[in-house]
Length: 438
Image (cartoon, rainbow, N blue to C red; front, side, top):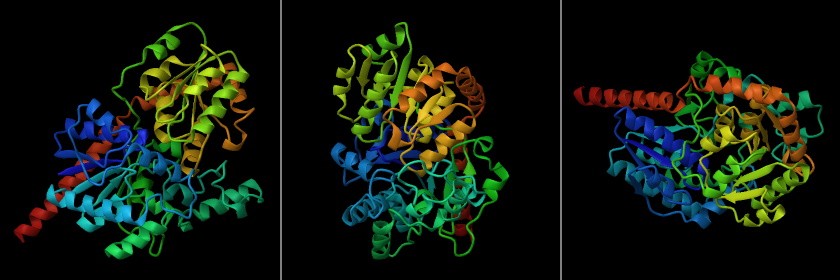
């Protein structure tokens, strides 16, 4: 059995797990989705997916806390989860895997699976690293973070010197790992030696294209952790291709009316960030131009945004971004890979406001393609509106996004991911049969 385990506190990870689960089902793979519940649990049922709930359950309130304490938002001296939560979740997951004869686990940022799969003695497949993987750092391809995630010692160096040092230090930082390693020691399982290792599985699916990130498929698959490096020794990498949401949620009537009316619409989809930042972005957009603004509010209490400009700002909850984006002139996102790829796949230029290093990479790559602009989070006020105005005034941005939409359409990212997972599952089955026969 293959177990797909999303973190339902994150819209992007819930949606990407649904995409991979669908592709696995289409291939006839033995697969079951399991989760601890959470904010976006309702999307599982809406997608027609049968799933199991593992105790302890995550409430929407706890999910919101986890998002606020995650990389890019929370302080790096903590591990998002309490030690008791890590113990309880890891133990319950391991029991579930054993009870259901699970041989491969696939997760979207349910990081407790780093521990539970070791308890159960089975491999873990991840996709949430996106393209933020060691071969890019080893080739000096990671951009300098634009926001507060840039280490203080590098801030005063010349940019090229700082970038080289940042890439060299990629695997040496152990931010957010302390709790995981305390619990790993109590459980007697392998620790998590670095922040990058927190994002990497035994098989890490790189959900992008080689020509976007600058590392060939052959180089990516040939990569192995060097002896003594800050990665788990079993880590392997393979391209899957772009994966973004195709959520089966209705288009709200007010959103449809806004999209159908004449004029220019800007889409703000910043689903895993603080409401204060969303408010600042929308206020700056309203002040900078006469365009309308559609906001994917998700779990945020941002209804008061509508008071900024009557009739020009509409705030909704979870929206089908794959249907919204082709109908807007530009978008504003934080830079999660799902949002970036949804925009590019729709041919929509965007402004990216990265909150952590992985998002910096995603937006940087899109900017290198000519389809996006990067706006540091500390200069949103007075900046993001000007960036959107530039996207609308210079046709080259929309033209570049349109070109890459054609390229992305050629690759079935969820299908390639499912094929790699099925191959791993079959390989493990062959080994097991050979062991029994021997």
